[in-house]
Length: 367
Image (cartoon, rainbow, N blue to C red; front, top):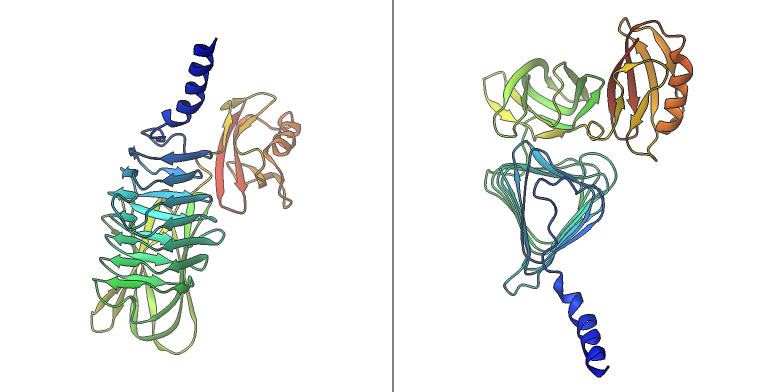
């Protein structure tokens, strides 16, 4: 009996220490919620991984994310990279892609810890207030764009290979060092106060505003779907020399998500300067779907149960059958559409969903 008691106690004592590295799936498929404590070396390889998980990378741990698309996005929740300045310290390494901290996310880099991003960093460019707390080291291989929803704090080191642009981020709580190897941390000779991109159905609406301009001939709009190479997709004439606010817009009719955009600004003498880069990404596309494609008397939705959407149901000619201005959950939207199905003629129909985050277009065929 005493031997049994000793064995039982040993199991109770030893068991908590049998959990070593808690790695996410290697393709990042389980990053939607939950929590991970990483104590060893973990690797994710995915096109455009999105995390809403709480992730702690301990001093002995590292997380390497190999981005085969454009970016890794922390969508809400938090990442803590632990360190104390004495090796080893935690590391988050993002290879071949950018890092987007948005929609209320918080990323903390403790003293001695490292956040390394091969391409661009986007902080607080969309959504709710997002925070980057740097007490260790952050290395960025290209540019940093800090938007109106961003908060930058800490006393660590921020190293940027190209340029940094602050479009409204509160950085009053950051007392560390900022090094921009590409030159001064600003971009356009015109005074650019905003540059945004919004998905509108199957198009992307780009808007930017200048406060002053000097000899501004115009803007080429450049787009990238891999985060590395940009192509020109349009041109908008500038205002010359003005001392008042000027609004500009451009519609990209070739929807790609995620996509990056920048402005290439020309002076009258041919001098060229580039704006900061913005990231436009649909966060609904992997979440909401419908089935079956061919519908008789009922349509099913798969997506977030608690999120609310306004909805419009139209046919391919644009005739509207349902249009709601009051946001509703997917179950209620399903009921509204099911009530109309018996009245719909055989044709292709389009559902347009819009939430506080983004918009999405879905299609079905009524038999």
